[in-house]
Length: 606
Image (tube, rainbow, N blue to C red; front, side, top):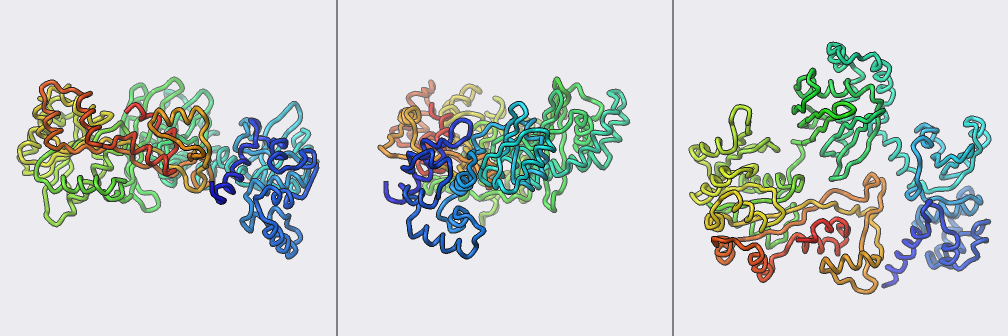
């Protein structure tokens, strides 16, 4: 490792000094700093210690001491932090050493909910502190600066003996966000929610008129509005309303990760669901059966489209609200993450007048976004074409394209539309999903008779797509003749660049890497998520596509057209051609530090 890597590694070692309870291991710390552990715990000059450790130079310490002379009220640790010589953790250790208190890393500490609730959010923010645990009548409080706490006053108010421990400001902010949310989240509206609770106890299960009336009153309207606003601010893809025995959990899915936002009293559930049903045009009386609805509106001037689904459960109706942002600009195909060669391959296909491209992957793998971006590319070409889509439902409204929504209740199904669509003189046909034999056969025929066809399938990879079509009773020779491209894709979580952590993989991870075909050299380091304010303590920032793109040349068409399709033989042909698989793409991104090892483990069998 070079000098920069050595310095980075020394700073990373600090996280390894924290034991399972989140407390610093002073024995390990003393070994790292080459000083007596008793000296560390009873008070010392941290500036000299970290010079000895090699984390800062004597010259940097001298600069910090000169700066401290300009403001004698500042600790040397605070000055070193402001100059960028040390990080937040070292500053807090300095405060702990100077005050003779233990140091706790809150990111590792286990905090019980009933203990946290001893303080309100305002008091936690004012004191820059959070309760940690209670043992008999002894309360432990984590604090950024011990001088801000009046122990006698708190002890009298809470009827408990108080002990302080020191933590980092970053750790405290993450804990406060976890337990109380931020001011852009829902907990800022707790006063409005309490008004609802007071009236909710009066609800009679049979009194539907009351339910409807409450669903239209100001407090519940404000609550639902702020749930939606909170989701929009975080760009959540889904809102989950999950009832329990005593509480209702509000959960957002952001970048594929479920995040608890807040909890409500269970008495508010019926009013909450009633308001959502009113907005989405559902039957407010029906609680025994699942229902679907839709909400259109604006949040801060931006259009939103929400698909709502309700379902009965043991503790009451649950709801999931799928968020769609029409004003959010679709990525162009150059922004989807394709390599230059693969991008050229897609553009060449889009210039054809007939053929078929299939996009495959599980639900939530970004198939609709990829399809929409490709259609936008075709729409914006100088040579105008007539594009028709058949979708269930229409996921994204695109100007300049005729989009036909399926409505099975009146018999408007995929086969019914496709049997008539050719009479509308389309150049390009996009079928939202191939679900049955008849749709598959019509799509194949359209591709063979002078139309460019795009569609999706729920399969794992290119070979699985061919097998699925054959299982749908499509003749293999038609499959081989019609298909030109198969894109199989996944969305994986991308590491947050602000906090991703470099580390040495352990023996188990090294063995796993070997099974994935990754040969780690001695000293090789990987990245893993850590969590910070920028990423809401998830460790991730958005998602990135990993994919395999298969172009059917004459050789592959011949193999796919065989009467008895042989997946193993076809896979060997792809290997000989050097086609990059989803796994191989994931390995490349992992070695670049863009995604962690855990994100590609689910794809290793491919």
